[in-house]
Image (cartoon, rainbow, N blue to C red; front, side, top):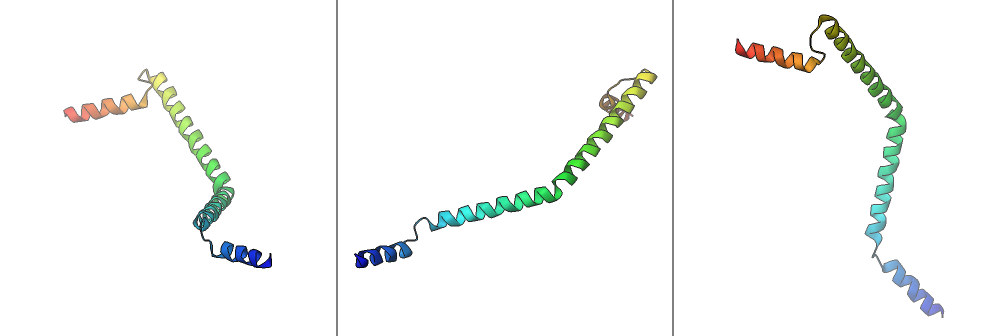
Length: 91
């Protein structure tokens, strides 16, 4: 009985099948852990900066729309830029 158990333990120690799968799983866990740590470290800062940029962009678009409405010109700043580019190409 002890001899069979020793043989089984020896076979299990020498068997390397599935070892690469375990290595890939460990690597994947490390990558996920690093990604979570980086997000925790920089995530709130990044969200804050993106929110500030969106608010600034929105306020500039609203300002251009209000200015265009007062002047009676197009409310689309891109259309104005395209018209200006077309006029410069004709000259």
